[in-house]
Length: 298
Image (cartoon, rainbow, N blue to C red; front, side, top):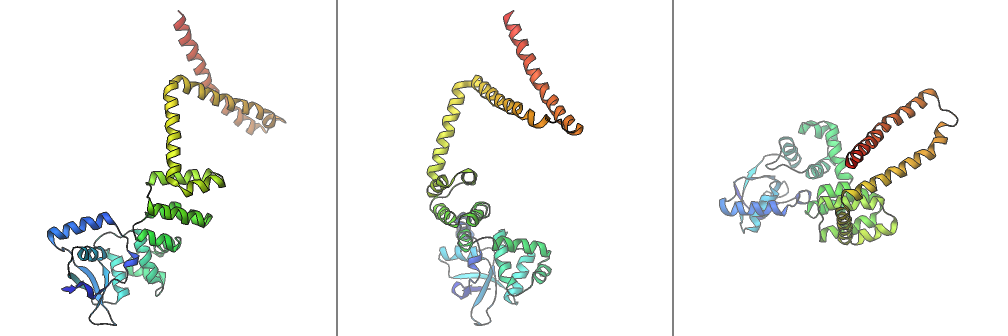
């Protein structure tokens, strides 16, 4: 049936993700073809003239933005919890994100046991528990930013949540910065990797202005690439040999520690065998150099 949009109660709007691109595509579709799929509602027990929206929040928003007053609905003669469980069991009209499932499960877990929920939706208890842990692991401000589409679930779970546990001030500063100027997944990975390896002063600077840090990092990399290009393979050869030389010197210094007093026979055999294996490439390298140099001199 068709209902006035204003009679719907969007009770679970905060638990749904906002996706501007998908919303825009849906608006264009509705402008061309109208609403093709009804939303799912259940009666509101407190007010017979109103309905609780279970699924179809993006369709509701799209219809509002195109100025529609009426909405096609599929009314289920069920309670709210029963309808939510049924949606979780069969899946909504569009695939829910994991965080959306987690938010709805959190809502249901306040009134039902995990075992009851798992049985109703055809999942095992461990799956329900993992989804709930995803929800509980995120601070409230991160959850709000995810649902509003300001940051991705990946950024929240892989970077901001761990950062919040280690340094809540840094997490809040970075979150505010990402809401103003988003970073790609690759850039955020790069930022977080360097953050983990940096001292306190460096961390402060990179969190205060992530974009500036990434630009400086890119400039440094470009300079390194330019130097490598200018030096050519000869420069790379020299650098690699310098690294090998340092490793060999370190191994020489370790000999007294490893072989004095003599180690057990099994351990000694293992150490020597590893050395013999590595010695082969050195010998081949030496032979190849002699071969080429001899050929050039003839």
